[in-house]
Amino acid sequence: MVQFTVSDRDFHDLVAKRAQHLLYLASRLSTCKSRKDLMVRPFLGELLSQSMQIEELLDAYDARNNCQWCSFRSLTAAIKLFSDVSYELLHIQHALPAYRLLPIEHDFVESTEDALTFAGQVLVRAADQMLTRSRQLGLPIPSGDQIKESYQEELPSGRLPHDCGTRRTKKGSETVALLSTAFLNLAAESQDVRAASGARPQEYESYTSGSVSEEKLRNLQLRFHNLQSLYDTHVSGSETEGMDPDLLVLRGHISVVLHLLKTATLLAHYYERHVQKQRCESPARMSRLVEPEKLLGMLMKYAIAHIGLYIGCAERLCQEMLKRYAEVGEIEVSIPRYRGFHVRPCTLIAKLVLHYGSEVKMRMDDDVYDAASPLELFRANEKINARKRRWLAAEIAAQQIINEQADDPDIKSVVRALILALAEQGKIILYEQPVQIPEEPAGKEGTTLEKVIDEMSRLLAMGKIDIDAKLNASFRGDLRVLADIRLLAECGYGEDNFGNNVPLPEKLVYLRR
Image 1: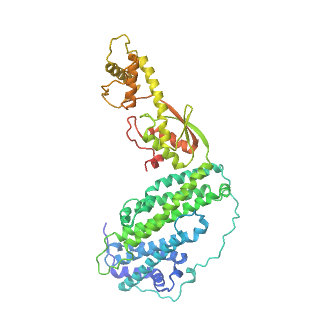
Image 2: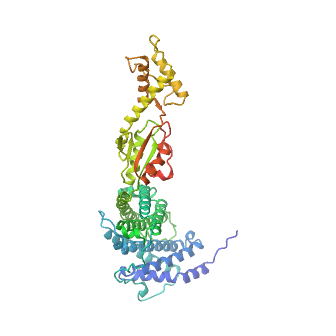
Image 3: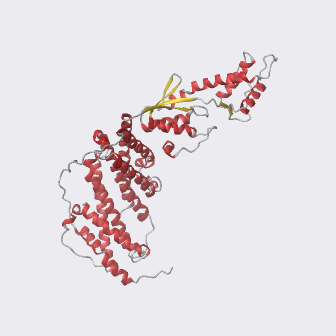
C-alpha cells in the first residue's frame, strides 16, 4: 500500500485549527495565579478531553516519529495523563467522606492533597512547555482574560435523599459471602503489589519491571473494577446493604483501591513509556517534565502504599463478615496419599483456612484438630500411622509367606518377598527401589512374624514404603472454605503419589503465593 506524505503546511494548518481549545486551556493553566482554581473537575475534564482528541489526531499522522512534531505530541500525552491522574485524585478527595474507610497509620487526606499538588505542578510545567513549543511551531495561541465560569466547581453541601426504595435479594447471606470471598481471593492475588509498599527508594526502579509494572497494575485494576461491578449489581441499593453497615465500608475500600490502582497504572505508564524511553535528539526537544525519582516516589509512597493498607483493612473486615454469614457444613475427603499430613499438605490446608479467616475443624475418629494450624494437622499423623501399622500387620499375616517352623529364618529375605508381593498387589507404594533394609534388625525378640512386622513398620516410618490405605478425614466449617478444601484434596493436596509438586487449580493459585 502506497503511503503519501502530508505537506508541512497542510498538517500545520490542521493542528492550528484543531488545537485551539487545548492551547487556550494550556494558557489558562500557565497564567492563572491560583493553581487551585484550575485543579477542579470541570477544567480537568475538559483538558483531558481536548488532549485526548489532539493526541489521537497526532498519532493518526505518526507525529511521534517526526522530529518536528514528536515533542508537541509528547507534551500532549503528558497533559492527557496528568489531567487524568489529577481527576482520579480529585475523585478520591471528594468521595472520601462517603467511603467510610477504616483508620490506617497514614494521613490519607494529606497524602492525597500532596499528590494532587505534585500532579498539578507537572501539568503547569507541561502547559508552559507546550506554549513554548507552539510558538516555535507557529501555532496561534488563543487569548482570554478570565477562567470560564463553567470550569469552576462550587458544590453545595449535603447529599440527595435515598428515596428510591430498596431492592430485595434472594439470599442476603449468600450475596455477602460471595462478595467477601471474591475480595479475599483478589487480596491474595494482590500480594506482590502489596509487598512492594515496603520497598526502599533505591529499589523502586526494579519494582517497575516486576510487580508494579504497568501491565501488572492494569490487570489488577481490571479485577477490582469487576469486583466493584459485582457489588453494584448484587448489593447496591438492596435490603442486605441496609441491614449490614459493613457492606458500605467494604464498598468504600473497593472503590478507593480501584481509583488508587488507576492512578498507579497511569504513573507506571508514564514512567515506562515516557521517562525511560529514549527521547528524540532533535534541537526542539523540551526539558524533562518530572524527575524519575519524584515520579517513582509518588507511585510507591502514595499509590502503592495506600493500596496495600486499604486492601489489608478490608481483608480483615471480609474475614469477620464471613464468620458472621458462615453456612456451616461438613465434608469427608481422603487424606494425602504421600506420607499423610506431612509439611506440604498441612501448610496448604492451614493457609487456605487462614485466607478465609473462619474456623474449620478436622476430625479423625474421636480426635479433633484445628485446621488453621499446620502443627495441629501434623499431629494427626500419629493416628494415621497407627492405622497403617495395624493394616500392615494384618496384611503381612494374610500373605502366608512366613514359616514359623523354619530354623533361624533370614528376616531380610522374608521382608523382600513380602515387599514384592504387596507391591504387585498394589497394596504398598515403594519410594526406594530396590528398598535398602538396614543391617541391624528392628526387632531381636519375638516370633518370626513379629520380627517381620517390626522391620516393615520401620521401613514405613523411614519413608521407604507407604500404604495406600484409603483413609479419610472429615472437615467441618464454612461451606465456602470446605469447597476449596475438597478441591485441594481432589488434586492430591498439591502433590502426586511420590511427593512431587503438581499444579493447583486456578481457583487455588493463591495458595502458591
